[in-house]
Image (cartoon, rainbow, N blue to C red):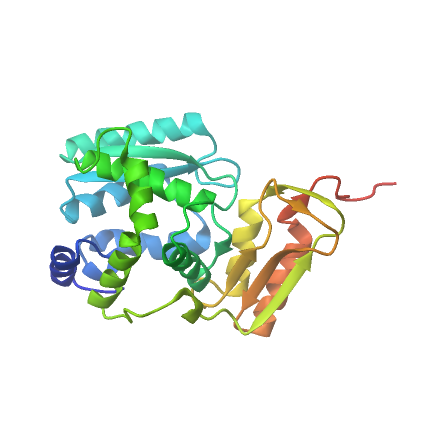
Length: 289
């Protein structure tokens, strides 16, 4: 996904879209240096974040822009109030740069899909497109955000964008467009979700008792996935067999951790044991005497 700015423009004009890493285009070189240090240090100052987001959009020549702002415990934005403040700042900055910006405030208190990790997330997205599956929180959120873009571009009437996006999935057009983009970027246009491998080492954590999943915490999930080797190891990550609100029986698999190296799996499991990323109603957290 590393291409020059000229290649990105040519591919976009041909296929109507691309999925690329902006850093390789060298359109905002000054932004790339601090980013290398922000990720491992887990820092992202507000002013720097605003400049980083909008500089890339301006340099890419964007006329309209939809920005997803996940809010909630463990997300970068703590609550809706803070999200609205951030949205206002992005919209105002967009006006100064002659970019029409709209923001989607979404709930990011727990993972939106069932998979976290490079290959796992890509496989989940491809599987939805292959099966034309219009259910699940990941699809609903994706269609809501895509719908805003369709409305801003004049492709769909206001309030009808999400339904238009859903129809593209259910008709198979979204899947075909994804394959077109993969092909023009030099990938295998016949790729299937089942072709993407997970790490060679895995461990499944089971429910200790009957109940319902009452919470999945973002921060522990992210820490587990990083310890497992993601994003450098593409097969590393976590698959959530159960999501918030779903019933479980004792012994049901709650989640599976994947890693390319056994020692990385052990490191991830240690974090899982210490943080309990998935909690079940009635589950004993600890006994104090």
